[in-house]
Image (cartoon, rainbow, N blue to C red):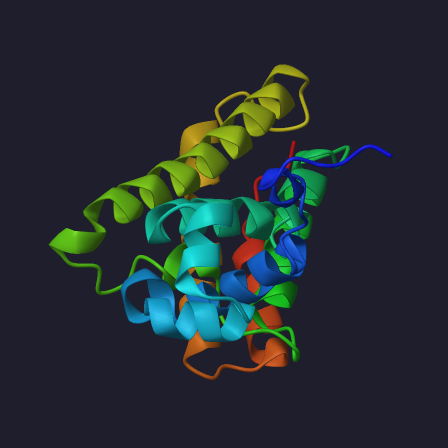
Length: 204
């Protein structure tokens, strides 16, 4: 009969918790409280694990936040990628702003946008995370710019349209929607804002 050496049994032992579920809960804490507002106690309590388990599975708080932001981009904020695949520039803008309204006013989620909420009131200790969020938002703006530049090239937007300015306009409106949502604005109110913002969209 084969005997297992002492200590070997723990090498393949499962963590004892659902890492995906724990990350989902951490994402919601960051979403609701921001990066600096979310303490390790808040995070581990929501995740249902100890600090030791958190460090082992996700790294430090900054590492955990980056993983939570990735999850947010692939989940609640996935409307951005879907909007970019729309066939016309106007459809892209409409899907982007409508998606922002829906994502920031979900009844079963924190109000607002994690990418905006987490960077508010960030002091020196949160500078790295704040910079990461700036880069994340700028990347989104650049994806919009490239898609709108394609629309100009294809004649879907006027030749004199400025893709960079239009992309920044959409991102600014979306960020404003997120801030208003976190302040209690209703979905209907914010949808009217989105509709008004699209009222002056340039025609081909």
